[in-house]
Image 1 (cartoon, rainbow, N blue to C red):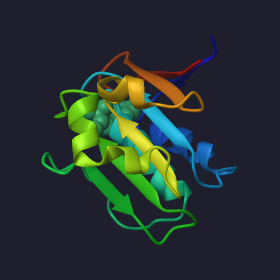
Image 2: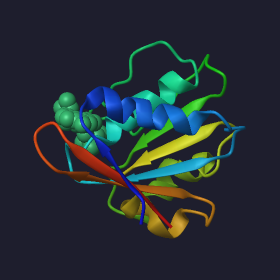
Image 3: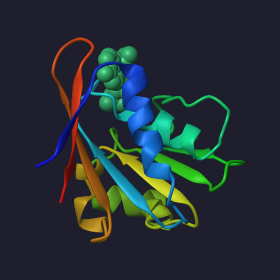
Image 4: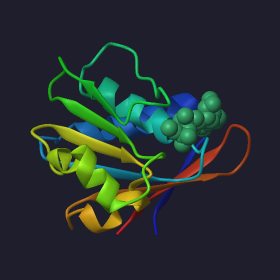
Length: 138
Ligand SMILES: Nc1ncnc2c1ncn2[C@@H]1O[C@H](COP(=O)(O)OP(=O)(O)O)[C@@H](O)[C@H]1O
Ligand SMILES: [Mg+2]
């Protein structure tokens, strides 16, 4: 399977930026990888690629971050604190799967059963302090 080596944070952001060219809305990205593997850095690239210029953060208690004002709205779901599908549905997560814009999900394993087949799955691995590897999971 094709893999890409990401030598620094900038490379990781730039990689996700390349995803944005053909997006029209309704796409779902599922980002897999351990804590600190760079999922949020990929989100930053995606957000930047869609022309949003504000900050991208991951406050611990916010499950959904909305970035509006770029070419398409982006909904960034960080499901680290979710137990499973039942809790996600209670919170209203299904509204974003899909959305009118681009949905990008950290910890997608938590809601695996809710993800439609068109979901684009990407996997990050930590190689060293500064290096990551990313690959598409079919
Ligand atoms: N090549 C790289 N790509 C992405 N992050 C990197 C890289 N090298 C080092 N890092 C660091 O790893 C951390 C990744 O954090 P983050 O994107 O929040 O991870 P996650 O969202 O997967 O928990 C950041 O502190 C970042 O500076
Ligand atoms: Mg994160």
